[in-house]
Amino acid sequence: MKTRIVIIVVLAMILTQQGMGLPPFNKGGDLYLRFSSGHPNTIPSPHWVEDSLVARYGAMPDCIKWHGNIDTSEARISISFSNRDNWDEFTYWWGDSLKWGQVRPYFRALLTSMSTGDTLIRELPVRDPNEIVSNGDRGKYWANFAVEIKDIPIPNDEKIWTLDIVPVIDLADSVNVHYENPLPSIICIERKTALDSLLWFYTFGEYDYPGIEYELEVLRSFPYVKLLLSGSFYHYYYAENCDSVQYYGERYFESLINNLDEFSDVSYPNDTGLDSTHVAEIREMMDDICVDGYAQPDKYFPRTFIF
Image (cartoon, rainbow, N blue to C red; front, top):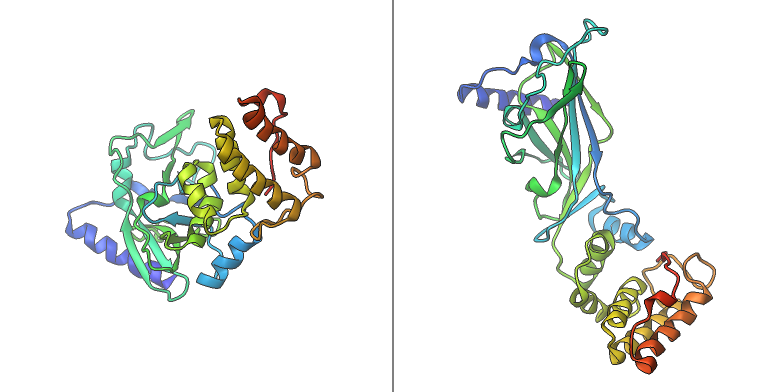
């Protein structure tokens, strides 16, 4: 808490020197800063994801930002204010026309290293300054805006950082500031090794298919990863490529029935999604391409696999 107060005071001095006035928070009431993580991109993941991250960085982060990759990871903050002096008729000071450009100067992102306690201050993303961030009902308006991790510079230094959004002025004398939910922990990782690439695919890539080239690259290091083999097999099935569908189909089949995927928590044949019907379908789908000469997806019941 002392660190946060010192940073607020320093930022207030900076803004005063820049000639900015105080925002109308000083009317009293309660300011709520509510944090939540967006896409939980480390969940769901097999046990080895958590094991590898804890062994490497000392903890399991809530979110991963992938250096050099476009991703959709986000940590959100919603801001609301109420005048508690009159609960029945309270109104919000900003009305229905509060703009992002009016809110942004009064908040900063505060990053704190979980391992060293070092702090960094980052400005919130510029975005469209004319974007309306207030909304409400019957004259009761609040601000609601998201701060996305991908828009905040997180150091690529193999440290886990907690993300806080702090007011740049000290509001304690006039407003009660409430922090809800734990501050999200974030790490920025660069894909340097094959294991990093596999981790990226499990924690983010499967939500935004990266392409067959990526799957084949990782399979060169980890030849029996079912999630990757499944994607490669179906890719070549629809491409009606007999040689490739046989090659990846045989390896996929072998990985399933012999439980060769060292990164999977799911075993065959007892776990949902890896039943004998699906295993038989793999052989039949290879015959579709290499015997009949064309893909026949309508023959097979759609299924969701648990890897």
